Image (cartoon, rainbow over all chains, first blue to last red; front, side, top):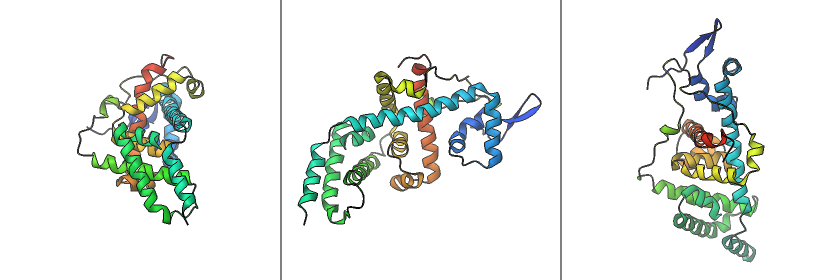
Length: 94
Length: 166
């Protein structure tokens, strides 16, 4: 695939990074791993692009939903026999 | 413990095997268990490692592509589709059992390569370096897989949550 990363688009007489750049580097943006001008370029794009702002919001919601839905499942299960067995072995060791 | 292995392997028999292997490893490792970490945490990590070993053995099997679930772009770099926010917040969505079940089922649909990284980073909360070491891949590959896994999960949930349904 031909890369379009690093390209900019003009809007209202100003240069902005593209939606592709925003969505591709979203993880780095959220982890604050971009250089300070990169973070700023993201915020400028998000301020004028409702589609990317919605993508960011639903991406963050997805992370939260995944985390909480699985935690609920893992925490709601009763302790299993195996855990008790190992605990008993631990208690019995010299 | 079985739930962790089952979520990683998506196969009951293999999950039970992984837990069994983990308990054998735990038994052999007992003399090295210094008691500094919680027993549950220690056992949990051994089960995750046993499941990872099973996944590695599986590598030869072909895996479904994640590409159809990733965003696409026009030649000028604009998104090919226009995204819209979901009408309900994550907090509100999590109150509904059918949404939580939909999320779990969608995670199960992710290809194993990506699901594993998602589980280890977002659920087990290992850091990028720990996941890279556990899977024998670079830190950059972990970041790429995590991002794609989250994107694919978002894509699977979007048609349901955009409409305010599960």
